[in-house]
Amino acid sequence: MIGASAALRWISKSPPDLDEVRQALENIVKQGQRTTDILENIRAMFKKDSQQAAPVNVNDLIGDVLELAQSEVRKQNVSVKTELTDRLPQVIGNRIQLQQVILNLMINALEAMTTTTEHKRTLCVKSAIQAPDTVLITVEDSGIGIDPENIERMFDALFTTKSNGMGMGLSICRSIIEAHNGRLWASADIHHGSVFHFALPIAITSAE
Image (tube, rainbow, N blue to C red):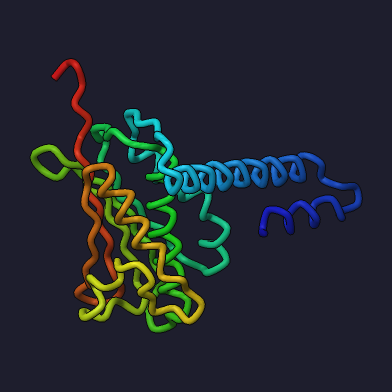
């Protein structure tokens, strides 16, 4: 973990830089808590426990997940771009489950760029209003792309193209999004890489 390595470096200095050590340790605690929250919600989902749904700001979710993934982004020398629509309407959903979907898509994108050497490694995350009543989130990468024959099969449980994969990630993601009355799908980028989209219905407020 990069945070732990940084803390060790700062504390090894003479004299130790305690402010930097404290910041590194606080980041470790924050990331650990987020991971715990995600795992607890996934366990609860499989136990069919009731999940709390509430208005969710998708742009805030994207920012949280990018912060969570920043160590892997730096490790793989990936450039991150965001195109987030201002004043994006909220959606109704379980915050931790939706975080898990975004994180899974981002990690898949980073893994897809591991062997990319011909062009810049770029992760692009977008949010937009999809008329008339849907919020659209898109995760794009500049990796190896998707075999057109696998675009739909990749959402099947136990299907994987990874040598060490279990084939459950995208299947779970689609189940979560469908449980939120949304839709998750993929497409191949016209130049290189892959694009994953998911759409969620906009929350209906009492003012509407």
